[in-house]
Structures are given as structure tokens and as C-alpha cells.
Length: 282
Image (cartoon, rainbow, N blue to C red; front, side):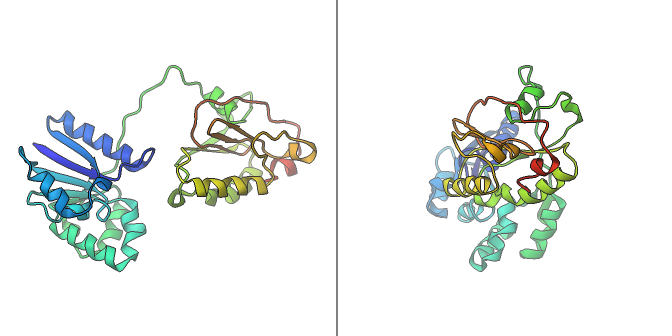
């Protein structure tokens, strides 16, 4: 079967990663799957023309009902849609978008939600079509890297401890963009770290939104972190140190944040500072 797969394929996003993973799965089953960026098309008519080309597509799939699914409304072949978080968390709040999403859901042969909660919210927010919404949790395959060293990774983040296995490390993978803003975790995690110094947060992802990146860096600096090229002096030594190497940002201490780029170098964070100093950013 020849399938057209539409999704928003912005670099370094979960959408792109998910779409590529699904395409790979479809092709491994013996089908042909052409993955295209929804941004390439201006209207449903453009997609309808593509689908009808010889040899024609026999079916279609889209991630996000509004962003990509609406482009399938004019095609004459069966299609399915996959709910994105933005569909339910943002787009349903806009009446015009919600109406379009309902049209897509009504015409779709099936819809997929990654969680039971997403299905429930979709059923409440849109025209009742819960019978055609299937829950399919996301799955991905991980492979052990012989070159990766957990201790060195933490050290490059500014976390120096003899027994790293004692740490409770929470890894948040998200690009720096408004909808994925990681700053909401900063204050509460700072307080949690003060209660137990073994709690460590590592944020890793690319700088996608330059405006938000500036805001994040401003917040970091206002809380006592150091800016690019600055060296700790006086009381600032009691605060987490910031090291930028290329496009990589490491918030040293209780919050470590990798924001894209390649490589970093580590320096020991003082072990003899007081509890007050260790909580300086809280």
C-alpha cells in the first residue's frame, strides 16, 4: 500500500521524531510511506492533487487534526489521524479550529490517541466520535551506547559526586520553545533540592525559540547564575555556575540544563558550601 503521511516536521521536535518512527514502522511492514511536511501545502486542494497523481496514494495519515489533518479533507482515499497534545490543549479552545477538527474527525476512518486521558479529553471537547478513537501508547526502541558514560555526563553538567548512583536524577527532554517551557519546574525543583540534595534535574534539548531562550537566560542570571564567560567571584561561588560551550548551557548544581550544541567540559562544584548557598536559586 502507498501511504501519504503528513506532519509538522520542524527540526528537533517530538512531532518529527514521532513521525519518522511511525514511518519506519509502516515501511518495515512492507508498505510505501511518503512523509511530507504539512507546511509544504497551502490548502486541502494541494494535497488532493498530490494524492491523485499516478501512481495514486491509497491512503493517508496525519499527526495533529488541525495542523495536518485539515489538509486531508478533500482527498478521496481513506485516512487516519493521530491526536497531538496541541490539538486538545490549545486548538480546541479556538472555535474556528475546533470546528475544523470536528470535520476531520468525522471524515477520518480512525483516530489514535497516545493516552487514555487524551482520548477522554478529545471525546469531551469534540463531536462524539469516541468509537473511532483508539488508544495506542507510544513506544520506542533504545539501544545501549558503549561510548556513553553516565558519570562523565553528569560531570559535564557540573554534578560532581563520588557515588553518582546515590543521586536521583530526573531527565526532562524538551526543546526551548514556549509550549515546552521548562522554567515552570525551576522554582519547585529548587525547593525540593533544598530538602534533599540528592535530587537533581537535568534539562536537555535544543534552542528552538530564540526569544524564549533570551528569557530563560535572563531568569537564570537573575537567580544568581553566571552569564557567558563570567567567572564566579565572592558570594556568587555559592550559586550554581553556568557554562556555555557552543550552544550548550549547563546550569551547575541542583538544576543542570543542556540546551543543544555538542560537548562540554566539567569543573568541580564546591562541596563545602552551606545549605543556604546550595539553595541560592530557590
